[in-house]
Length: 206
Image (cartoon, rainbow, N blue to C red; front, side, top):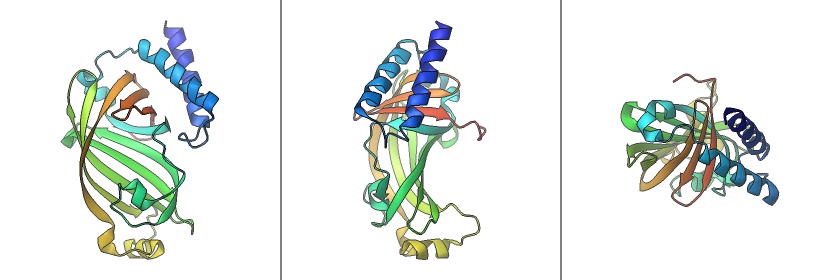
């Protein structure tokens, strides 16, 4: 079973990476990812993920989702309508889960039309519902520069927005069922029946 698990993980990771966050998947690839995910879920080595919350903790790289996110989008869409309507290109999505403060944060990396790099943060807090479900309260969203050598004022000027428009509160909730979990791979089914494939970011320590 261990060899089958390794093979299934390798296949899922390879197809998910090729999909580029789900931006470039084909119907065939979507079916393949779903089938591989279901096989892995049946072999889940961590049957009670939220009782092993330390294994969930850390920074995770989103390889694929069925959320319907577009590569070319706006800060307004990414922030649930809270931030300005600035066109951006999504270049990476990460999730950070930490025991301290029960943090459940989504980090979206993006590029503007002038090639300025930025980060949009959606802060959340989790509570444990049962052995596999986390309830998530989303608290705030903000945007900042990803370039250390670019001042905040210069970054906001590049985006064409005022300083007071770069952060906003949020007040909605969701949930996430962790359907597969081991040392470096996590599968999540969200409250809208979306599938998320996440790989631990080994470059960042817990």
